[in-house]
Every structure is written in structure tokens, then in C-alpha cells.
Length: 229
Ligand code: CA
Image 1 (cartoon, rainbow, N blue to C red):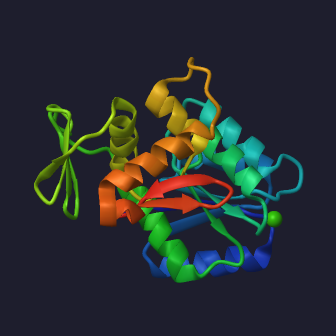
Image 2 (image 1 turned 60 degrees about the vertical axis):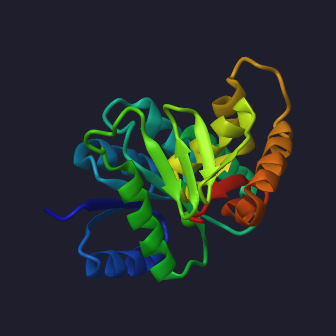
């Protein structure tokens, strides 16, 4: 069965372009032109992914995202936000609320399709994700059970925070995380440190990764993501 995508967007031209491209890529598509209609459709259709415009009449996209996450039925449906240029602060809020990715308008449709497919791949429930898992990316290898990271076969000395940061990013390759999300993952939500501390950990980690330090990409105004080495 085709995967279902729900578009929540108020601009008919954009809906039309999205629908055309998604159907060409063998998705089945539904759309809703307001936040209210979108929430209702999401609850009824339980789509495989929601494409969510942030600028909507009535309930805005961020509130839609919040309500999708609050509702048990829709909590795990991946959300890709459609945002305007210069609204990085909304992107940060959206990612914090649990959105999975975002794309800035005007978008390139092939890039959007690639993002959608990547999010669907990442969020697919994986069978038998083993304990003692090994993460790899190019020459970089992390053995979670042994707590060892190595590069081209040579072990790298990482602090606990750096190790946690690296594994967190590697587990969700390609996904953007805000500084606050990374801090929660690295030091826990109860420790009081500023979000900028994460920049220090990232800088140290990049240095230790040497020529592969560029795997950790800075997403300006938003946070960081890991790209395949
Ligand atoms: Ca809009």
C-alpha cells in the first residue's frame, strides 16, 4: 500500500505542486487548508507523514505540531515543517515540539522528496535493533556496548559528553537538532548549563574527528546535524 501524506497548507498553488510531485513518487495524498481541518484529518487518516505549513490562518503550524504531539493517536507521525526564510526561531520551536525536519520555501521539489523519504526511513520502526549496537559512518565506527569510538580503525579518546553527543547525532543522521535538544541528550534536562555549552562540545568533538569533523554540520540559527562521513 502506498504511504499516505497529509499536507496542511492554505495556499492552493503549493498544495497542487506538492500533490503532483508526491503522487508522481507513489504517495497517496490528502490535504487540509487550515490548522483545524489538518488536525481533524490527521486524527482520522493517521497518515505516514504530515507536511505542515507554519503560516496558517487560525491555529498556526506550531500549535498544530504541539497538538499532534499531545494526541496519542498522532504522537508518532513524522512532521516536516514548511517554513518561510528568516524564521529560524520558529524552526527551533517546531523541532523542540517534536517536528522531524523542515524545508524553507520556496523549495526545490526534488530536495523536498529526498527529505520526506529520509524522514520516513529514519522513523520506520526497525526490527531487532540490537543491543550492543554498532554505529558506522564512513571511517567512523562507534561501539555502543563497549563505549569505544574509532576512526580508520584507530580509537579516539572522547569525553563522556562528546561520546553521547556523537552517538545521539549519528543515530539520527541528517536530522537537525536544536542546542537545547542536544544538551538534554548529553547532560540531561536537569543540569543547568546554557545552550551555548553545546558549541564547546561540538568544537572539541570536531577537532577529535580531524578531517571528518565536517560531518557535524552547523545549521545556522537552528542547531546541528550529522551527515554521512
Ligand atoms: Ca501559509
